[in-house]
Length: 244
Length: 61
Figure 1 (tube, rainbow over the protein chains, first blue to last red):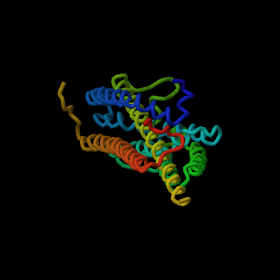
Figure 2: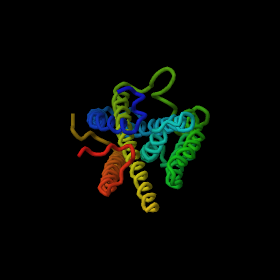
Figure 3: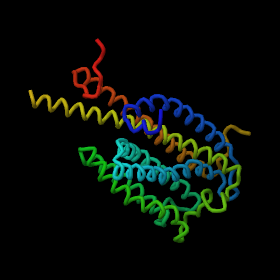
Figure 4: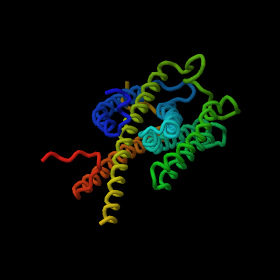
């Protein structure tokens, strides 16, 4: 099957039926290995065992931005190319992105209390991620407000493109402003500054969460295609009833 | 190597973070499963009433 064939929703459904079981197994294996490595990773010399929170906080923080980037590409697909699956992809990704962002904020807060002495500060990194979370909720609300999926898709795509401005602000907030949050230590010019014994479990957990997102996103897209078919059939039934 | 590593004085924060992650991920998986079942059931009900998309091929008799 060529990649272009996946633009057809029926072929996309057949594709998801084939790949979802394999993706689910790969995700479960990645989590099993990642959690094992995380659990038995050595303590940090300064932070002690609380470094274990990093193995779930950082992958969720990465995904919080990556999912919005996926939604931004899908929004371009909606507005520029009118790709039939583009707004399906954007709509399905939004609740997943909101959940990952919520987890990044929550686990960061639980990590901050013992390390910084506070659950929350209004510094640039934390505030910009909170804004990202609110933007996810805004896009989800917009999708639910407009009944016609095509109109909702265009409005949500514009909001998503505007919201993409926040991504570089989040990434570089720790460089542009004086923040309590630490600077980049993995994705940075010059390479990671984390010891390999801690970096390895972090990267495996990162892979596990990426696989989780891909699996759930494909499944949610399949659900959205089915939801639109149900809507089409309801409309056909209503028109038939009016004509009778 | 002990199965239960020493989590130190901040064990409650570490355990709370992992419990929250498990709860949210489990919630996402349950939501996706439940939504799939609901949409399949609705489609089956509509098709049982004879409502079909024009692009759907008629079943072979």
